[in-house]
Length: 275
Image (tube, rainbow, N blue to C red):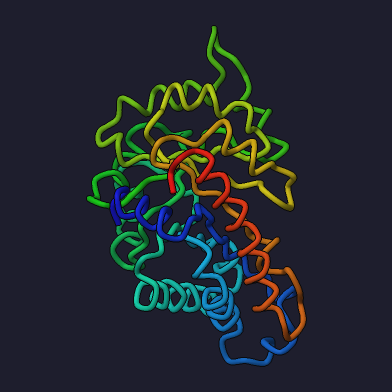
């Protein structure tokens, strides 16, 4: 998927919502637990209920690989279901992969060729040669961890070396890499005020923003500081949608939660003259 196509979907749906698929078998409705493939069946029910309100899905790979072979099979079925039935959705493998060249190439091959995701999250710590293999694929996107929403982010990301914080150095350095235009960045919603400065550095790249909802991030503040002339934002919600209820009306509750966010996003897009 191209960025232009993603922006068209944002305008069409009046939404920049990404639904995270973090499937915990301990939290899904009891009605799924005796199914042959409860992980996929639950994902399918969430996708069918929310696709009208979002523009992206983000399977969190850890929540699939935790269940071994069955988890990997469920992941493959989930991405195939998305690509076949909802090809307009932007897909994100939340895998946080990165390694030296040959290994990075294999990770890229796995997620971009075998699974056919549109994008993948990648950690920048090992530097250029651990990231650029992902950026060799046309119309595929690498989402670099920049400023995350977790409490431990301050251990490294907010440390300074001279006049730059580490996450600022990561962003500045990545701008020199091949195919920089295919980079997106993770910036946590709980760090919304930093978005203004980040936008000055990378005005045109999309930002994947977790942390709205359960982690306490403000959607309005994210839009205020991070939105650009193509929206430039994918705001993720996982638990607030997936586990909006745990009974037989879970899909209806998920749809209601997604619709609420979409309606808030519609107002923000209109306020910024994008719809």
